[in-house]
Length: 327
Image (cartoon, rainbow, N blue to C red; front, side):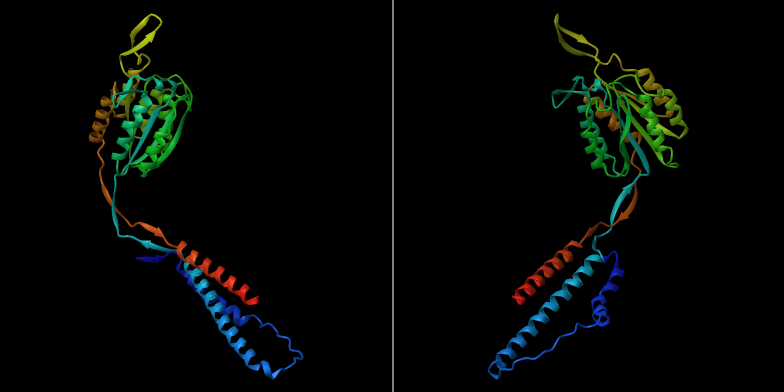
């Protein structure tokens, strides 16, 4: 059905009539005129035609005014009520975008990809499944920053994750700062179920706060942290002396990540390949299920541009007819 957001603006409809009645009428000057009986009939016909034209111009003006008032009142189409699940959970995703995330030790669709590309693919699917959660995104390297605040708009959060670039926050890894930023953002939301999923491939090498200290602060606000260590254990690399096998995850501080998870009531996971990460997210869906509370929402579609456009067309039409009449 159609409703008007600002229905009181219809009180402005009689405004042109009020102005017409209150303003003094323009004086017409009368002077000597030469009367020629021969042209009486022609003059009468022209006066009749002019009167009809003036009525049409007035009708166009009044119609345009009516449409303008309708547009100003903001007509809206109110759709049928829709049930939207709301879980009441605040879920932050903290993703490492330091320089080491460019190591290509993962596979996606049987193609070698870097760690961040793999995270984008799997985490994006995880975000799409979290219907009802308020999801936020933290990106960190040498510094940590909030890329997206908590929101129910999963599509936008996923898009911002896909646009993340390696190294834009620095080459090092500030795990403690990422945890501290999460605590800061969630501290003012008491009574909510708060969850942080931290994905990193290294150790804390930058930042102003130690990871375990930040974990203690998280525990105080009842923030559960699930930590995920990303990176393969074996990787074949080409060197001057031929191919050799290396451990690309030698810098991963699994001990600290595990302590962070245990201290906050979460869990630590190890993702050596994309299949591991998919299983981890599936397990997180079981550990942190979406508890739905249906909230009825009605979609609203604005319609004001239709009467506004029609009013502008009528105004230009009246202007064109007035100019034509004068000529």
